[in-house]
Image (cartoon, rainbow, N blue to C red; front, side):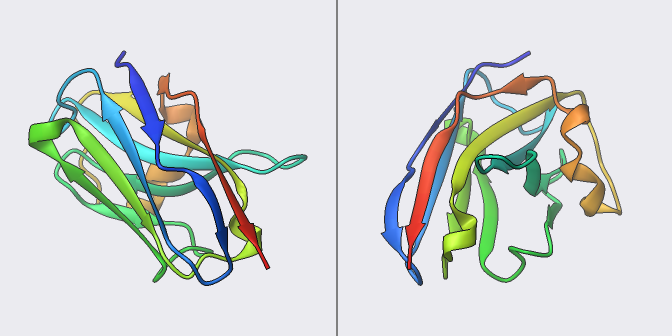
Length: 129
């Protein structure tokens, strides 16, 4: 497992942007696959964006074209750039890591929470209308 710490959450108005960061205790580029999940009050946790071990990304339909996941290998950090935020994006956002090398041609399969065994503490994102 790897220790993950998220940051960058906050409150913004609809249409605004935020960038979330997830700092890992070790370089995750080749030994892990990564993802961002979110959970709103009263709702189940849902996958937002995932990245396999070679950098292929996949996104939930609800965020495609608005959110971008990236990584900085030297800093052992992954990011989630969120643009055109809407009130329905309000949630606690979690970074997650799965052990092992994973490469996929179906990046949508990176959004299954059961595949991940390391989780951060979460960072709150609130979008007002």
